[in-house]
Image (cartoon, rainbow, N blue to C red; front, side):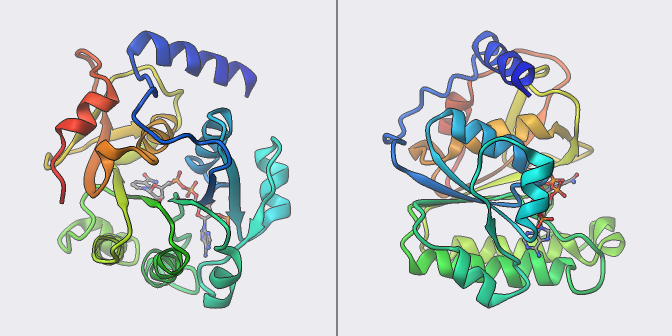
Amino acid sequence: MKGTIARRNFLFSIIGLTLATPVLSQENQTVLVVGASGGTGRFIITMLQERGYEVVPTSRNPERAAATVGGSFNWRRMDLTSRESVDGAVRDVDFVITAHGATEAQGRNDPEQVDWIGTRYLIDVAKSIGVKHYVMISAASAGNPDSPLNERFGNVLIWKGRAEDHLRSSGLPYTIVRGPGLRDNPGGQKPIVLEQGGSGRRLLEREDLATVTVAVLNNEAAMGKTFVARNADDGASIELQEQLQGLLPD
Ligand SMILES: NC(=O)c1ccc[n+]([C@@H]2O[C@H](COP(=O)([O-])OP(=O)(O)OC[C@H]3O[C@@H](n4cnc5c(N)ncnc54)[C@H](OP(=O)(O)O)[C@@H]3O)[C@@H](O)[C@H]2O)c1
């Protein structure tokens, strides 16, 4: 992990993904990260910790998450399929980042339960406790009823689209980062492109998705915006902050 972090820091510097963004001081600022045990979530919590945030990762199974992710984190138990569980876990935090997703096409942990109903609980509780910025990882094509992915995986894009709409109308300061097809090669190797619109087969390394998600947190240039993050095969890297500034608000 140390090697990964050193490599990433080096890559940050050479490709200009400077995180010296106009953010408020992050000292004593607490971030709840949902889906922290996942492929993207585990990068997110490490990056946040490196930047000085207090990190509260959540999992349905904190013991298993602590053992598989490692590091030094105080895991909080939360299952989005239970309103009581969400009410109990979402407290005393300044920010929320979500990187969770349903685990089955149909059943107790399907997209309707997790990506819509559970996410709606989470947004509502975040609103009630005055969360300052809610960053949601969603999916490219969220809200598109015609994508074949809906048939393959429990109408996932329809439910993610509903959750996006709920967040946009919640009154919370928010940012929605839409991921395309995610992969597990090292991040920082290819340019990251942030775009609104666009289509076709797009890919992004999970580590790069985490970089974007952490960069937008508490960042004025990202507030009220929805966009897709993807890797480009070649071309120049443009600083994330410059790209964020060029995106349109919803
Ligand atoms: N996979 C793709 O190609 C793709 C494409 C576009 C967008 N996305 C989105 O990108 C994000 C990151 O994806 P990923 O593939 O890196 O994630 P992942 O590895 O599949 O991790 C999913 C996470 O969701 C959590 N989770 C599942 N059910 C839950 C529940 N009922 N309550 C609370 N947490 C629950 C799991 O935590 P525990 O098991 O520890 O509870 C796990 O940490 C997700 O929002 C995903 O929908 C993925």
